[in-house]
Length: 167
Image 1 (spheres, helix red, strand yellow):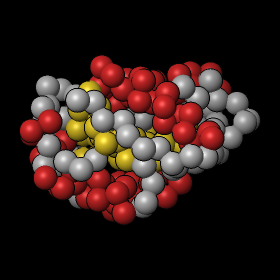
Image 2 (tube, helix red, strand yellow; image 1 turned 180 degrees about the vertical axis):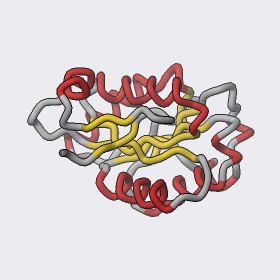
Image 3 (cartoon, helix red, strand yellow; image 1 turned 90 degrees about the vertical axis):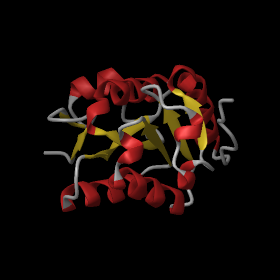
Image 4 (cartoon, one colour; image 1 turned 45 degrees about the vertical axis):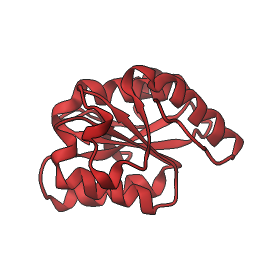
């Protein structure tokens, strides 16, 4: 059996080699840039939307974990996802920014030296982002599709993504 990766929250795991996941994401045997996606457990709808937009632009989302408490399995899964990915997307909502696990995930993503994009959702305003995360490239969820396209182009060209800031 292939390595399993969770998508979107509680109990929704799927084997990345499973045909339904490949067809949903349009995955084929061609290697696609992997993007770690992390957020709060209560934000499954937004996480699924982010995952879908990444798939639409030819990126392969890997689940980086949800902030649901301190469990070694989530921590290792998150680190493994960040290491294996070409970039990270952090879903920031009022719930996720209060989570110590989300802040730790953001820190790990930032020190990886790979591009990190924060996606603002759930009514979170830019002035509500905790200070350590304020320097990240950020975009509102409604404009994430364009940022995902740019990220996909940059990663496939091997160029370093510059900015995705949504003012």
